[in-house]
Length: 360
Image 1 (cartoon, helix red, strand yellow):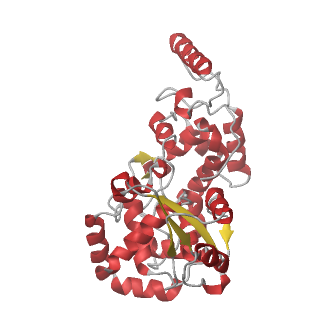
Image 2 (tube, one colour):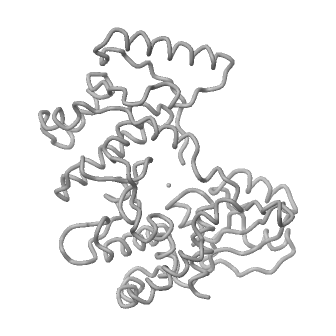
Image 3 (cartoon, helix red, strand yellow):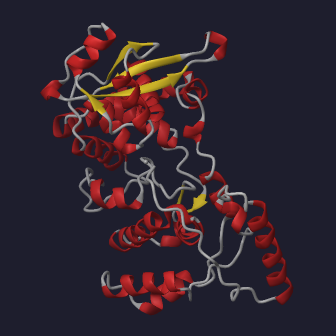
């Protein structure tokens, strides 16, 4: 799931350091970083902290957070103090945030997920859970192959749900990742709410470095908004319940307009033939073009989108060993629904190509 936030570097108080020597060392460290980046480049978040650095819960940002949790969401103050006391920065979380997988070119990105083993496991899952997918397709109108592809990419079919302490990761990102601090503040609140509602110990949950968890790797806010109880036990469990996992993925895509058996993408060539299309490509996933305009410009015949939906333009890098260049595709409303799950066009294409492989 890539939002823009104001870049603000927050000064961190040194009160949490109990040793004066450590405080001096940190001061010198931060000072050297400031000099290094004086030329204008923004320092990476990981460069502004040391690993295992204490988080100051007496800071204004944390006191404001506690006040909202108490007054709006009715968490007892003593419970919050007990939960948050002793939290420390996980610097690896910040390092990973500064170099996301989606930065790789597509010819390197795709093989990370669309592998022969993944295709075999996906096909086996579609057979094993056929009856369950029959119910989910009837209820939500989302193609089963896409659900399994997302499951496979997000958690290796449930086998890898992440090894980061989720509560620590969310606090690290709230306290020490200024560019998206507001976003992770919201996710932290949502996480505490879902843990309370589902009787989960917040400190027991593991997930990704970016705050996603469970077999579907939902962010906490997505869990609260789109999570589904499909096994009838009166709780939403995206960690252990496959009916809940599959139905929640389907519900997410349905809410963003997925249409059963509708086109997902179309190949439109290795070059874009006008500034209209180039601008749409460079602007990103929210820049849409009319189907008829696209077919006229590129001089191609592609399926008409259902409901007069518009298309976005995605560019996928080809391997230099295969001649290099670009592969451009038109993303239909179903493709756009996948990019609501994860904003990367590369991610959506990997999901789509894995789902296609399941049918072969």
